[in-house]
Structure formats: structure tokens, C-alpha cells
Amino acid sequence: MFDLFRTRLISEPAVTGPTRDGQQAAQLSVFAFLLAVGILLHQTLTDWTFVSHSSVVALAAIWVLARPSSLVRFLTLVAAQLAAFAVEIPFVVNHWMLLAIMGVSMLLCAAVAVRPGQGSVANRAAFYRAAAPVLRGQVLLMYLFATLAKINTDFFNADYSCAVGICRDLPFLTYQSWMALPVIWGTLIIEAGLPFLLLFRSTRVAALFAGIAFHAVLALDGFVPFSGLVMAFYWLFTPDDMPERLARVRADHPRLDAWALRAAAWGRSGWTTACLAAVWFVVGAAFEYRWFPGSLATLRYNTMLPLFVGYAAFVAWIFFRCVREGGPVGYRPGLVRLNHPVLVVAPLLITLNGLCPYLGLKTHSSFGMFSNLRTEGDYWNHSFLPQSMRVFSFQDELVEIVSSSDEHLAKSAARGFEWVYFEFRNYISRHPDLAVTFRHAGEQITIDRVGDDPFFSISPGKLLSRIFWFRTVRPPLAGWCPY
Image 1 (cartoon, rainbow, N blue to C red):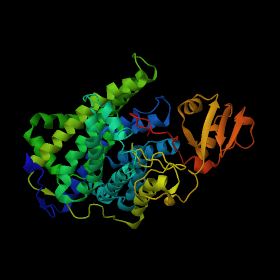
Image 2: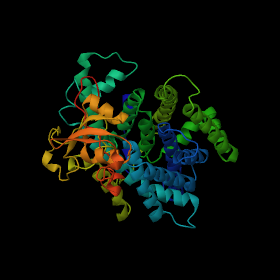
Image 3: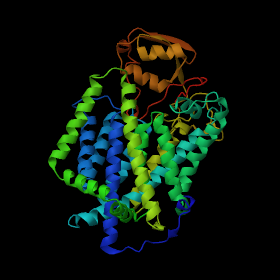
Image 4: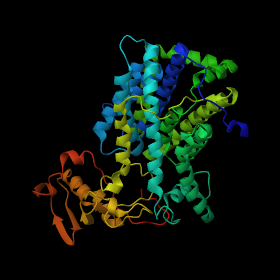
């Protein structure tokens, strides 16, 4: 078993010409399939409505599942996700932000790599050669920023750490106080180690297995959508000859091969897409109209988790067999080498997004995933990045809610949460009928109806309010992860 992780390398697989194009085209097909599954898992987070942008994304993902070898279908899914992101921004989660930036890079790759009349296999291979390196770089940057955000005093405090909070909620584990430090440091070491292990060829296979296990544990605590997308991202780091290895595994398992051929035949039928879409909409209606007892969150968790566990176990088993039986693994040079200067846009966007909290910009969806990071007002808690990095003033002013007719603001008042002034103004400008009393800059202000106030009824900036989303500033509470 240990030999599996002592990865033997060859500098360049002995594959050239059309065969090499065929392998890279097949790599894109698997990536498209895994990404479509990941997007459908994310869609279970959304509030279901039959006529909405969310339905369009789900239908595009189902269309890809029926024929993942189609570049047109795949790019349609990428465009649909970007369009949904544009509708939902700024209220998006971290992995949806990451996928949107990836979508920008994939459309740029299509523009620079795909050529009319070049042929389907050649175009898919050219697209994958252009897209895979820049997508890998974005995954590595995401992990680095997630690690950077966790290096703060509250994350290392066993009473407040999000790592401990997540551990407490794991369904298969009875938490004991002695677990706190191993959980905190273990989380940090794994998250910090993954990008470096993925970067180097000699440790890449080990990193893939460690990452799958890590995200499977997170899925047990409810983070299925993010874990589902990670399964697709990890495919980008698999050996270059994985399609050939998959063919060998299929040859060794005739039933698996027969199932794969049957699934491919079903996918070529338009009825397959229609049936999958019908099933999806029936499940969505069951959630939307509460056909089952219990809370919506519990229903989603109890439905998604078994499906994801089975899916992740199957993918991990396939990958295990491929690596074990395929001989020495091969990686071509240039893991994150950009094939065109314009592709630098996406890594720059990832970097800017990750730096936002420290620069004084938005704090939501900036890859600070459950990190306890606090950068607002005078609450700066990062262990080595100085508060002088905050060059923008959006986080400087905080608001304390005293009372409000709005349920969300009233809860903040009851719990002692503060709001970033920009976010507070943006929120109340969208709710003209609410009344609120708050303290700001040492002054208590009462507004009987926001819509009647000439100042607070206006958004602080239409463009910025579509980009920036700030978390409520919550005091550390023992046993509870604030972010």
C-alpha cells in the first residue's frame, strides 16, 4: 500500500500526435462530467423556483452529464454559471466565487485555443491544454488564501476556533477537549500542505488522496457543495495518462465497462436529458413545497450526504485502481504554465479577491473559509499581517444596532453583532419600510421609516453594492464558529 504513494515519475509520457490529443480530449470529458455533478450539488443550496436562473444552470449541467464529450455543452454550462453568478453577486459563497473566476479563464481559453474547422478532438485537446494550467493555479491560490486567513489568534484559541466548532458537529465523533489542539493544527497543516503537495510531481498523488479524504470529512459536517466541486478540481492534477489508465480499469472490470458503454448510449438520446431534467425538477419541487416533514436544511443534508458519500467513494476507488494498476505515473512539465498572456487575468482576480479583507474591502466570499478572521474596525486579529495593510476605509466604521422592526437587524441587536457601516447602509436602503435605532460614531440615530430618509434611503454606491458584501462583526463565542 505504501508503494502507491511513492510515486515514480517519467518526465514525459510516451504519447504523441493524435493519441495525445485523444487523451487530452478525454481528460476534458471527465472534467466536464465531474464539474457538472459539482454544480448540481451546489444548486441544492439555492432556493428552488421553477423559472429562475438557477434552473437554467441545473439544466445546463444535466445537458453536460448526458454528453460530457461535447465542448459546446461544456462551454454553455460555464457561461450559464457565470450568468447566474452575475445575477447573485455579491451574495455568493466562496466556491461559487472561485468557479466564476475559473469560468472567466475558461472562456478566455476557448477564445485563444479553439479554432473553427480544427476538428472536435483537436479543439477539445487544445482547450484542455490551455485551461488546465490556469485552473490548477487558481485552485492552489485558493488553498493558500484559505490557509493565510486561518493564521489568526482566534483560530488558535480552542474555545473559539472554527476547526473545533466543525469537529464538534461531526456526526460520527464524540468530541473531547483534548482533541482541540490536534484538530486546529491538523486542519492548518492539511490546508497549508495541500497546495505544496499538489505543486510537486513526486507528492501529487498522495495529495490527491489526502485532499479527497479531507473534503469527505468536511462533507459529513454539511459542506457537500464545496466538496463536490473539489472532486472536479482534483481531476486537473491527475496523471496525464489517466484516460489510458481508465481504459485499463474498464478492461479489467467488464461489468463496469458495460455500464459505461450503456451510459454513453443513453446520453446520446435526447430522452435521457429530458428524463434527468424531469427527475431534477420533481426533487426540487419536493424541497420547495415541503412534501416531506422536517426542516429544509435537514432534508437537504440527509439527501445530499449519502449521495455524495457514494459518489466520492466511487471516484476515489476508480482513481485508486488507476494509479495502482497503471504503472509509473507521468506528468508533463508546466503544471501552472500559462499558454497565453491574457490568461493572467484569472490568477490576478483570485489574488485580489483573497486580499480583499486585509485591504479593507469586502469580507464575504474572499476565501476566508471558516477561519475566524476579523479585520473590521479595531478587531484585527491576524497573527503576522499588519493592520496597516488596510488601505481602504470600507471596514473602518462600525454600527451597533439598538433595535429594529426588521427581523435580521433585531437579531443582530439581541446578539451584540455590529455591522460595517457600508453594509448597514446598503442593507437598509433595500428595505425602505423598516425602522431602526443604531449607534454610529458615538451618536445614536433613530429612523422611523428608511424610505422617508433622504440619506439612508439611497444606496452608498450602486456599483460597489453589487460587488462588496461584508459580514456582520460577531464577538467570539465559546463553542461556536462565527464565520
